[in-house]
Image (cartoon, rainbow, N blue to C red; front, side, top):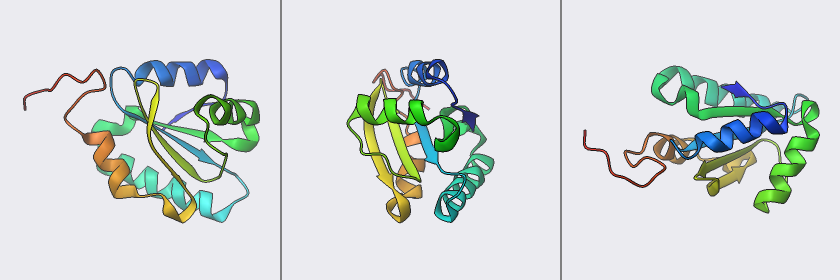
Length: 122
């Protein structure tokens, strides 16, 4: 997972959302549930190398301003852990805490339709 620490990092991630669906995982470095969510997504990243570049992590304590900016920009109340899936700078799925659906997130990250909407034959 690539680390988001600044707004510039966020803007790079959002630009990537035009090439493929991306995940931003907000975590807390003092929350056990955040640690477990992070570990699940790290396992997912190991299992599906092809989605590794689509996954980003933001540690709230290290990037509070960026976390707040995400909440304000997308109208999502901040929670931690929180999974936010974005296509073309639009949130297509988000959930927090134990409600994060790893299977749904995986499906969205692996879907055959790229962010630009053009279907790719495989």
